[in-house]
Length: 267
Image (tube, rainbow, N blue to C red; front, side, top):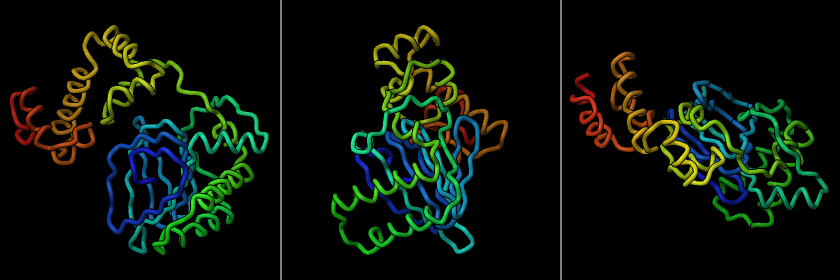
């Protein structure tokens, strides 16, 4: 998958790992295509695990909170190329090609694309631009992104309703969403956006449902989950703190001791 936590323009990005890598959570603002040359990508989403392996191409729907691990393959590395599609690029493409924007009704967030040599060849065609150290012109980048769009429309027609749905997130069940995504360490305004609310409305609705502020609820929820993982699952604090939404081990340990009266290493 892609490397930065958020993208604001279309482009393509190469990644290579020689050891297993645990990503911090990512908010993907735009749609993304990814092809894996070697290794595997393991996504954790709402309690479910989704695995993509060497040779797979997959599509990620925009406006997603994601967590992914990358594992080297038998050749010792994990290589992938990703293409990002911003909304302006897709709007321009739809106008130029007279494609009607459609309302997407699919809840599928990660889509395994049909195995086809055309995906393999397209992904391979991007590697020289990413590995030879030469800068790529904006026009060439645009053409390659458009090629990716045409390829997906040709090989995976169901993606049309995903690619050209330009609507913003609608108002959804806040309680259900937060209970599924509290472990993601993102700003409150991002939670508000993803639940289809302004920040003020989100805070107001949140306090009506949970009888406390978002920040206090998140702290309690994350610490409770950490306690469960350490106490019941025999997990190490150093393995848990990132998973439950903390950035810093020392801050996690301080908050944990304040909440439960003992350091996480003593539970």
